[in-house]
Length: 223
Image (cartoon, rainbow, N blue to C red; front, side, top):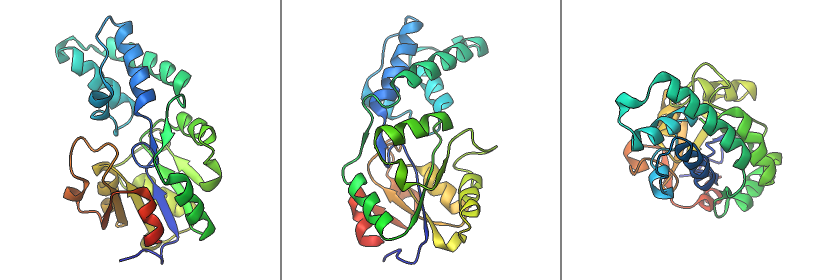
């Protein structure tokens, strides 16, 4: 099996291209400490990443507080605090997964269009791309707040294909979580699931991507 006939590769961001857990955890813990709550570990935080910043903050609060104590006002204060804190450390300890830089260069040399579809807020995407020196590989990107709906809805994937004037059958999604695979299925696109990253301790194969890979560099054999 290969995907050499594809023209557009839509990548997830966190857990697929980058490990942002250290910086997300750092910001989340600043928020928890602000409310006199005990910080959480990297391992605990990794289970909460993948559905966007609001879900991350909600899960972080639920980890330390009974849900009855999380009022609308408290959540808003917590989210605003987290959002500002994350902006201060957005590319402090975040790093590319092994093989990402070399593989992106390979795919770029082959002429594939590449984009990013993430549930991370849009404003944080470009600073990370700049900080990790990979922005030149991507035609465009969408975040959680770019469109009315986000993954696992098909809308952002269909938007990217339309923006770049690529047919659905010539487009493919690469991601680490069920949100990526379900979004691809909802958009009638093929998908590649990576077995690392953040998928809530679930096996990505359970969601039936077209192909599963263990290392990002394996893409060089498929394209």
